[in-house]
Length: 388
Image 1 (cartoon, one colour):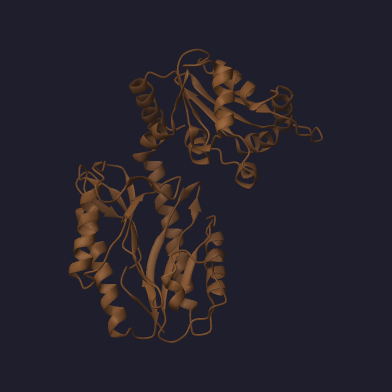
Image 2 (tube, rainbow, N blue to C red):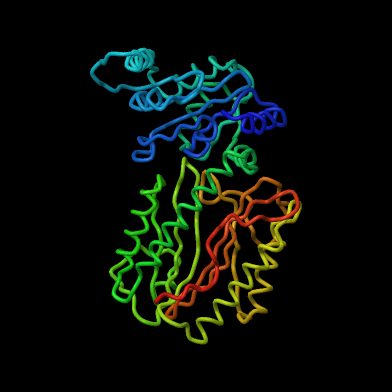
């Protein structure tokens, strides 16, 4: 764990009077330990990460132990539970896998109690991330640890993760640039007749070439661009179509998202006018970002500029939010949100416009809140892309 995470989590313990924090969501487990479980991603298995001033522990199904050892995950304790059978191998790595597997607990709650003891938090109040727990699982933990000891902690993790460390910022920037480079490859190959599925396949292939991981991307053409999140289809690009790109990737667990708009050939007057209004809104939002500024002020700036720019009827429920280990993190850039922006936060700003039966346009940029202002992390131009 990096010093930044230790500092942020220690602040939570001290402020809330807790002995330990227990993560359950994939993002929070990665934040505490650096471990991302393929098994959990596929099957939503129980995984827990325990953090206290005296150490860290992972509570995982036995099937996760080989990956933890192989990847060299730097935690103080690994407490597996449940059964998984594999042939015993030779060598130091195989010996460690075998030793950990032999000490497995019967259930996740038993394993959690063992992990808490191991990090010196066998007594005292515990903050438990309720985000990925069923009501039944919560009740089992409370019954095991004792009434009055367990308090909800999902919001506490969100607060800790808001301000990013230099390493996190570096990963977010790399994820963003991978997505932009992959998107540029798509823009270069687009021509009439290319389908949304073909374009999405090129994007995902380019992401993988750059050591990124993919997630569902939107490359929506013509009337499909009015659907906020359509699956790629056999719809083929036609002359005069708007193309809305809403794409991104994951790098070392950190997310990126890029929004751009293209047009096949020269834009008509309405296409250009709508895009200009949306871009004016984005520029106003970017200009409003600074430490201490309420999130709502960024929202208000975007809405006012978009309306003044030629879309007087423009409405939105938000114009962006934080981004990090999850696609959407606090703060939300929305009306009435008084939360002030903090130096070191990374926010994704967007001003989309959808009209069913016509099309949709969008531009999104990712911004690091610096000591004085917002620094745009994107390298690609945000203007209307003319495809030819």
